[in-house]
Amino acid sequence: MNLLALDPLLSGHIDWGIVGIVVLKVVITFALVLVAVMLMIWFERKVHADMSNRLGPNRAGPFGILQTLADGTKFFFKEDLIPDRADRFVFRLAPFLSVVPAFLTVAVVPIGGVFTPEKGGQVELLGKQTLFQLADPPIGVLLVLACSSIAVYGVMLAGWSSGSKYPLLGSVRASAQMVSYEAALGLSVVTVVMLTGSLSTHDIVMNQAGEGFLGFIPDWNVVVTGVVPFVIFIIAATAELNRPPFDLVEAEQELVGGFHTEYSSIRFALFYLAEFMNVVTMSAIIVTLFLGGPAGPTFFGPDWIWGPIWFLLKILVFCFMFVWFRATLPRFRYDQLMDLGWKVLIPLALGWLLLLASINIARDEDWNLPLVVAIGFAVMILGYVGLVAAVRTARHHREMGTEVGS
Amino acid sequence: MGYLEGFAVTFKKMFKGTRSGKTVTVPYVKDAGPKREKAVRLHGRHVLNRYEDGMEKCIGCELCAGVCPAKCIYVRGADNPPEDPVSPGERYGYVYEINYLRCIHCDLCVEACPTEAITESKLFEFSFTDRQDAIYTKEELVVGDDGRPKQLPWEDWSDIDEVAHLSSAWVRATAPSGSADFVGVVGWSGELGFGVKPPEAGQKAEDPAPPAEAAADDHDDHGHGGHH
Image (cartoon, rainbow over all chains, first blue to last red; front, side):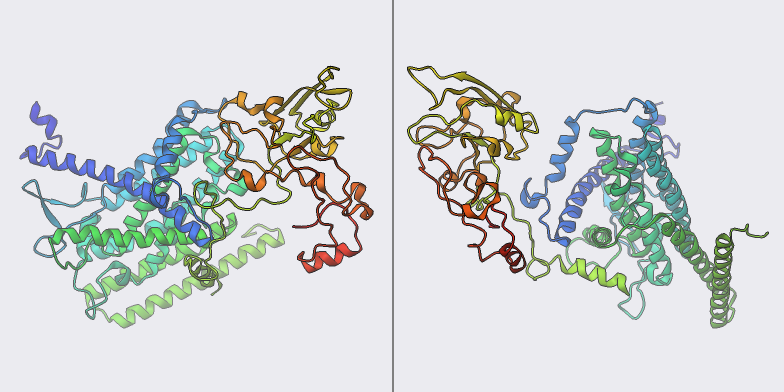
């Protein structure tokens, strides 16, 4: 009975060392994410302030670094309001639907490890060989996609259950936007999965830890997949995160606060937390999928210490990128958003996926590679022309006031 | 590529040393260095003034209470006791209360006052933490024997020496009714501690004003002070 409690998967050979490692990893990951979010909020406010000639938070702690802590404390002590017309159960549930997936996503991201062929990403902990990530399920990438889909429910149900107009409009936008961009996001991830031949995040990182080309270009998926899926992923991820220029869900100028208009106190803080946690985790996922995760050269000292350092540096670049987007780009109009998603990103991601797939097959079957690439591009251009023609025809019919096909 | 130029703009702003990245915010820091110079038309907390002989200027006419758009002033007048008059006239302000939770510092009370009894100082740092503290009574509003406002425990007056002599600019404006004939003419009584305050410079005397506005001012006689 005791064994069953410690070994729910009944795989046997579970001892205290393994249980200890798992517990330790859970605690470390949880704490790491919370601290990262705290710093991310401060980082965003500070960098965004710098980019608009302001000062940013500067009162709490050195450089205002404790501002998030002060805000969080304030949120805890605020009155928790639930509107009269709200659906009370769903209203209470929605913030957690936003936060929990954000936490779950981090679990499959490798944040360190020694990615050499001999060690295979393992590090030694409590006398055991273990991975520097909370869990490495064989369906890691699917879990990431699933979590980002569940997060849509948090936003959508929050707006719906508020019993108020603006939040409802925000949540309608949210569901449409996030569902459309999920497709482009998924298609660009598929290219990575196809090249790796595995859905496990650890395998994806391991696959990128090779020697690279010409001695200085790393063997990262961003190079191997030909940059396009990487760019599509970044754009789709920004939309998925509801960050500017895709922040129609919140759109202060039009919808007050968007889906969280009616939220206050710690429930609002949870949305806030989830938003910035998603920025950090999405950066981590970009790094894992396209930029080799924690893999990188080691210099001096213990070799396991360089994994987290490379990982942090890479994440920082993307966190900065998201802030930079916010400081620079104005918000999309709703129809522009849909046009970009459905008429540009999804066809492009699909075309590129098919191109990569045909190249892969050509390599396996020993076909003429340049010919396959040429035909692939020709088909893509043909498809593009067809798409443009279809869009033109549809617009023409719309302007003439007739039904398409009549 | 217009998009990328935009990214370059925001990126350049991050460097504080450059001209385009210069931070324009002036931090409000209480305990570092001197306070900023107060704008001439800054509206701070009210004071009830006294004549140079110590008599109160307020005559309890309630015009200030009547004109107040926020209804934050409460006044009750009473007859002066003949043996020990509070103000030179027949009546004086017996009760005078201003609720600073309501006051919007529009200065209409100052304009309405026939005796320049109520003016606004340049003291604006008085963050009370109690609703009761928000209601300033007559005891708290009337100036002390040196003509300076009485300081309450929650008020921060570290620059009182620079701003004590400044009252509402409207009182010392150049001309009533906007007539240029009154520029430089003193039309107000003296105050305890400060005597008769000098008039504001007229708009014509003001050269540092922006050229376009100065040109417009030459043939446009609005009497109230200048752009400082």
